[in-house]
Length: 300
Length: 290
Image: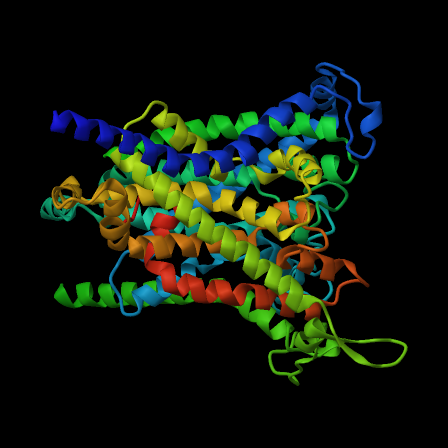
């Protein structure tokens, strides 16, 4: 009899500890993620502005139609895809090359890695400012280098549409290539050494080893890194906020940035919510792929 | 034959070393340039050619902390220390809460079964996936209604949320690494599950907890989007403050650079401390756990 009693007490304890340990986290998430998420969908059906809550009317899908039929929206999406696509592919390629460069053993490797990885931990606000300072047309150090030393014409980095796209990409690449370096290095070092040795016996070239052993075997982690970057770039806006302020005009406004402006500068809360929902759909799509990969990698 | 091979190897070595040096300069130069900008006089900031050697001035740093009133010329403290305190407190307490809750939830998810476990882990992770701009609209409305807008408490809650997903996933991984036998031995000795958790398991993962805390703190410290909307006056943190420095009376580049520099110094220090864990911190503990 004693044992059944103990068992009951034990399982009650187990239940209690589950409740006590999970509910605080769940409460925070319900309050700060789930509730806003539901409200967001709700607001997106109203012509609601929190400056004038009195005139709120249910307008069905009008907000969505407004956004999706507006050419301005598509310009913002096209810019975002360009920005994200170019940034991520440059980061990806550069990251792999740098990881390959740092693969060998050399003195001070640990220190070099620490320095190289630093930019991604910095405050994006400061990184944006830093590059804005260097990109100045008149006295920025980048134009000084291009114009006064190399003899090119001055580039209006932040004043012209096409240039400002590249300015944002350059700053973004500086900040986030380290992430790719980090993951690519991890991927490369997870490749078993004996494979290289076997290939060396067969007199395979370095390039052959890289494309036929290193890359295929590190593919899962590289893909993981790629999706991480895509997801983060889709929602990024603070770097651009201080670098270009979305300008010139609206040229460098990402979707996230437009959403921020719609909701907090024009105070079209309803329309902003519809924007947010569209952005969320894209990010949820990306993150569901990411989750599968994370689960796959953590169970490997 | 051997000679040419050696020669090639040497050339290759030199080339690779040069590339590493170029990489280091590319990484460090912008930060160095920002640092110089914070020490230049207003005239030296905009000279062509740019000056690498110049007369040092600490006036920008001073200006951040002390301002001179126009009428009387009196020197007064700015509210910068107050904003700094906001940043330290909200990020610090938020981190503490996130890591505590994350360790608890990570433990349950590592050791116990319950319905909807996968959903919970996904839900937790969504804190990292969701763009802040997307949920901030309804969040602002709720916060305003509950008198949490522009309060430190509100910011602490937000920063708890920001760190929670990361902490739960990383800590789950650390608990997964501990063999079940460790707990079973403790159970046999008459420990309750709670005692096992506090007295046996938590001490075993304290390195991981510290590193996780480092990451949560960095992310909260750098956070701008929430802060710029929710913490506009009383609870204002440093990142939106820097943007405000940009806005007033044109660009005071010296002051902007100095305040940017103050903001990244703690990150430098923390980053060096937790650099061994960086892979883990950036991938939710799926990779690079030690």
